[in-house]
Structure formats: structure tokens, C-alpha cells
Length: 67
Image (cartoon, rainbow, N blue to C red; front, side, top):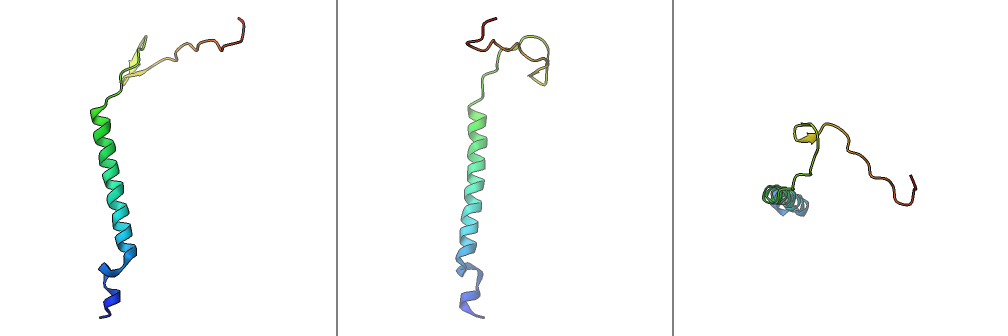
């Protein structure tokens, strides 16, 4: 068997493995950060479905447009 053909001597495989490990570590870090730093709930009026407002909120008037 040729020594240059063994899998652990192929740099592209090590690069792919390192990239895969970095992606998995990044996903785990995002999950942990998302679990630790929960968003504050927005104030809602009226009914909700699965903690989401069921109706559209009133849009504030655009600045500079007289009513």
C-alpha cells in the first residue's frame, strides 16, 4: 500500500473534519447562549396563540405626515 494514500495523510480530510467540528461547536454554543439569555416578552394586548399575538398591533403614524 502506498504511504501517501492512507486517509490520515490527506490534508483535505483533516480540513473537512476541523470545519465540521467547528460547525458543531458553534451550534452547541448558540444553543447554550440561547438557553441562558432568554428574550423578554413583548407587551401584548388581546388574545394570543402559542404566545404570539393573534391580531395586528396598531401602527404608529409615520413622522412628518400630518393627520
